[in-house]
Image (cartoon, rainbow, N blue to C red; front, side):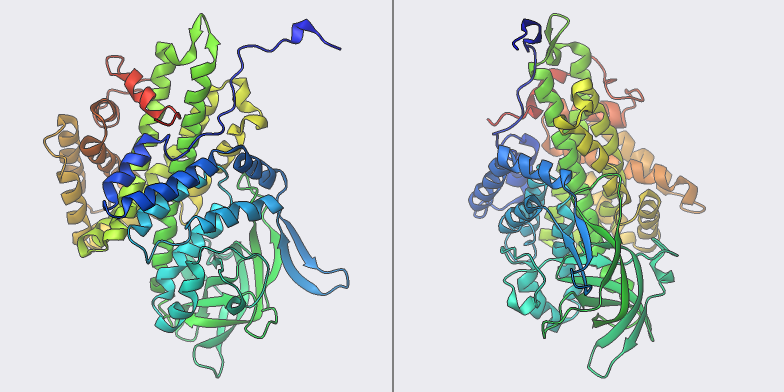
Length: 545
């Protein structure tokens, strides 16, 4: 029966039916900055199409259904035959199909490919983050395969295809394929050199049989995998196809799917190799060196993926407060809430600008840019992924109790947020990687200093932060205990320099005052009140211009 006491007022309309790309000024400006004018119209057109799709009710429904109906492992068919298949909800396949068609596995061979793909990845994964894993692995497999020109010629056109075909069939019969990766084992985790999976050579050139167990294997229904195993000559990289050229299934025993904190739509598996056919990639004993470019590319995707989560969380928070009234006015107009929103916006914009700058370095592919990436990627991966959980948690709080319920979508963002900090090496691994670059590759530090030096003289707080960082770097003896402190400063100085060069003055001023100048508390919403916080928030509101 009707009850007048249940009349609903002061509720916020859903953030739906908008262009995720066009509404993100930090991202659109970054794309315009890093994509050549002759390529920009095409890039903008494809990104706006992806943005409209990502903001649609349909894509949001696909994301919800994919997470409400997680993948299921089918080890055997009804007759008892081993099949080792993972069953996904149709929405998962729709998300993947749209992503592949949008070029999210195609970066390496087209103009401004990395910037276009990174921007698309940042846009599309705001609809659903879990299916980003196979997209990332497929994209990142290309540089590893290029160490073997024969393998690259065979597989790269399939990996960069804009056609998604689900189901296990010989790769030669498919217009497009996806890849996964398996490095970690129970006894070693990140210490992949302790892997015990064995690779026994066969008579055929580059052919081996693998025996062993992988503790984490991504995208178990992919068409192929890059894995590490111990060959007679040492740790080596191998390509393991799920289906052999004659149509028979390769030995790929899926023992179980991981029950994870978040990332529920995506399957992460433990797999068993027992006489599994594989093709060597690169030389024996150089497995880490072969696969390291894949790892670097997936680390960049960790940065991009975290920037996407932050952007969606901040967009939801600003949208909510722009409609929700309390204490006599809209929340977004309250000085304290505005401070919180502006603080969150700074993190989001800094992450976006840095992610796209790194992608542009991949496109440039010069010696200087490669040196820059050697230091900047692990530093960015360390810092941006760590900030993600804090940003999403605070953004959820902006919605109050409404944000704590599943229907808001915020709990899914919060569960997803810690993933990128762990995936492809947790914080300490990234910090130690930065130290190795500083100690062994002086050209990496030189390239970094040249990059941040382009903003010198524009803000006194940035100049002071660069000077302090140089003092910190002057002594790298017994530096391990200071590694996190150093990497944090590297990331913040880099973000500050990019914002000073490219962001509006109100954004760069607030960032430098708080993150570099020390005029900041230990929680969000503690920016100096004298800053132009209203302009910072208005810039980030998810309303297309």
